[in-house]
Image (cartoon, rainbow, N blue to C red; front, side, top):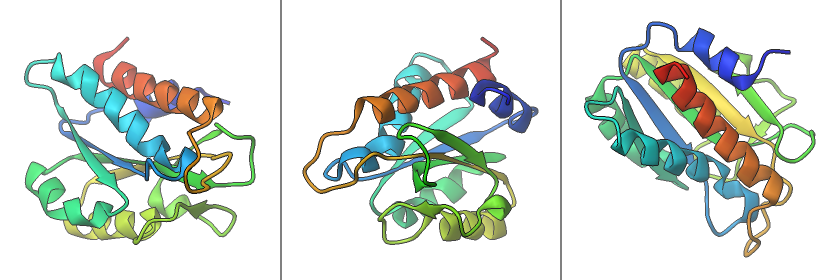
Length: 166
């Protein structure tokens, strides 16, 4: 099975403007995974002048950022969120919107990532990648697990390396 870095290198080949949308709630344990990954990507892109990546923090209402993302005019959009896929906590799944089936369900947010991705596909005409992280617990008031924090860092590193060739 290819690493997430290899998968992203293939999917982002030729990308000119990449939007990264982190989704999640810092109040619900591992649900914060997408936001953690986006924060790590943002820290790196600040150091890169004229970066081709722009990071958006969707929190629990990512649909509120659709206008900002459309203004950025991305060629590629990466959506990162927690996904219930009945796997070990911290498991990472990379999908395109059409690959999302009944065996995975997205987080607890107002608009599921699958519907949001379909909206972007129709309105932006860009390539979309959904990256999901299996949570351990999305219980209110819990801290994120070690496995999910590690997976978020792995995703951020893979995005940076896939784009900047490390």
